[in-house]
Image 1 (spheres, rainbow, N blue to C red):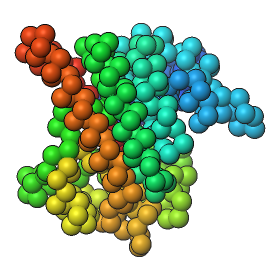
Image 2: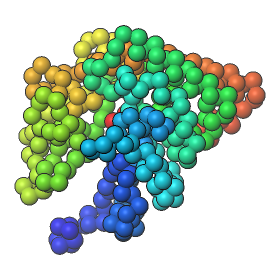
Image 3: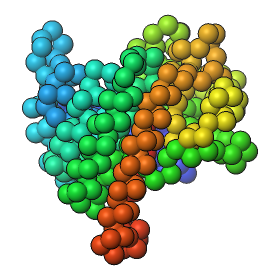
Image 4: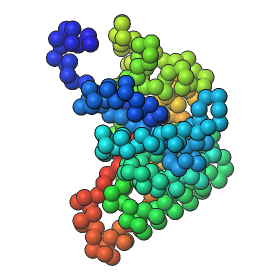
Length: 311
């Protein structure tokens, strides 16, 4: 509205990214907004996978009723409006055993790109990495044996995962915290939603401005100066399987000894290494299959690429 009032050259140059639980997606208010702004929208409906998994995580307040049935009925309309839509699935210690079935389920209902990651918080138990590896290897077998790789992708399987990283040329920050702002209902700006108070366990919310006063660039400066080496321990910098090992800037802040964003949380380390082992299994098996069938060159030209989104 302000850009319109000022006849600003950026008036029509904007994009909104929404992540929603999908419950009200079909409502008139939501649909009217989408129709009016569809050329400026990216919308993600978060559906965790199978009904069993989804309903263990997402229940209506005050009841034990899960929301799966009310969300999944909106998926056909969602895919009609955003046909290349992806979804985001998060894995924690309590739902590892659902990974294979949930990814396959999401493929089956028409969501062909599943971005999935393990939580960055320090919740992992002994043996969780082996459970993850087993689930991913079973998922790899299903995807490859049934040729689901042709029209689908899962970010757990990324061809460039698990390689050493150069300290100079591979030294960017993982995410866009500080460059892509989050805005709450009160008009406050955050580096991302992970820095809002409802997302934090122990730290104070990091507000970097508001809609009335604009951005405080002094508060943003530390985030804009972040890179891999300034926040990682030496073990991470020298790691032989560092590529694709993600971090969450908000979790770094929340878990740090002091209110800093320059201390990388590393609770995810063993889960990343398990993912690397399963990823190696996936690509070795897939390329053996394609070479035996003489289809590798064609696959390389047309393969669906995952965005490897993690947060």
